[in-house]
Image 1 (spheres, rainbow, N blue to C red):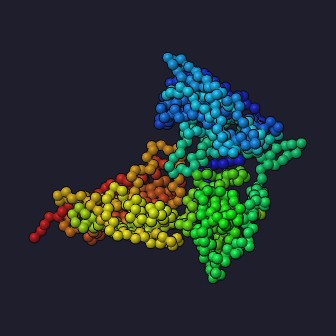
Image 2 (image 1 turned 45 degrees about the vertical axis):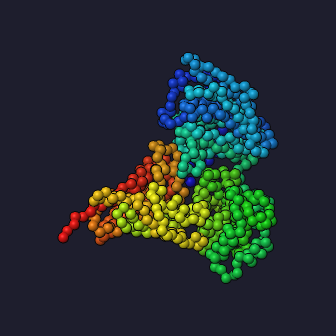
Image 3 (image 1 turned 30 degrees about the vertical axis):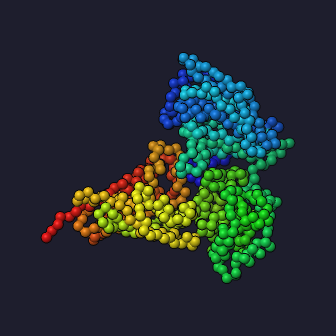
Length: 640
């Protein structure tokens, strides 16, 4: 888990009593009226001026959460934040909302005018069989409006308290939270986020307060931004009843045993007779250990379709999976585990959370943190993780969504955590032989070799282009700014999943070569690159996740035409981020009648913290800028 996301476990019985923070319901300050933009985020369309929460828990009374929010609308786009949804669980009347009040304050002729929402303005919307939302919209919303609402959410269960998010989608100027816990309850408290940890550390307190927090919005290269919010989570650790202490938090050993012992997971894993019968169609007995795994993997990916759903629990019976040959990730991988065990391996389910689902806190023994199940077995004495849901990925390459955090291997009596290591050789190597066939026209011989996840990406692109290699070349491998005539092309190793993908093409173009009197201007780069820097924001509060380490190597060999000399070349460059996480280099060298250009872009660690963002942006700026530089040739003087 990366250093920006830190979970601490503190076992406290919170008994400190704090006074309620005074809420100025309906009263606004001149400072709030004058606020036109957020100092640390001038682009914000709205801002949470203040947000207060308090939670109380007591045996016999359940849990009560009181919440108050005040928002100011800063521009037209901010009006969207006047539409409010309050979620809750209606299932078995576990939760309900009371004391909902809302009003909007507009300043007219220097005086505040308040419009109070009526009960008829609130609507209950059923989301599914378990969840509902209370929804309402503020009337007369305008730029400069201040809206506020408050409510109470009550719950019968005190096992897990409401977590408190100090950040919102928009900036938050002030967030305050307190917890009042009865004397017979002890909760584990987990801090997420550096500011909470730095400010409160191991202090014994029941009040937390943070100010001037950035907004948390979805962003490119950040699969789950809420992994990085300032947040407090609670889990019941123990409670006292009739003079006895009752432990609630169980070990992973206990919850693993409970999950497997009577569940459908156990039913899947116990289909030994059926698995051995299926193995008869897959293996002939002559295979090595690796070949056994590859054949079982290939059989499943070729004959069973993943329905697109990540989940760790079977939703259909084993018999139905075999008949329908389609299922969620957990169902297919449980069948995989069963077949591996029948083939003589020791295989176990492995629980994980995908990147979009979020990080896992090992201190919280809740399976709800996971959303997927894959297989774990041993090969040559080492643990390997396997997933049989994709027919265009080799057996030893996990889904990129899985490169998130450690997995929990459900070995019945001894579960353990296992670190996911991304494939180490993810490289795209491009070799371009280029020559000027005639003034203004260039011919290229392009060769591409892709390994690891880079090969997987090319396979995806090829099948998405309906197996049209010309479309793949045009859309994925060649610059969109250049018109090309693809004279010939071929692609190799599409089905040999453990081999690198190889693409070759003969291409010609007149776009990248301009002749002007005695001068020739050539852009040597024909390969695809981003049209603009994907990291063009001046500031970023979220980390950047590029998923896996990779390397891009581009070699260009340009045969200099007779009668011309080099007048100008792109300048050499060499730049890297702190600790060499990301590196870029470019150089040009003349050898005989050939000009050799070499570009290397390498990422050794794909995870960049917010303070590393400017250096990453600078590298991408340089990477794109170099692609705009030209080779300039000048016609040499004729000699007798």
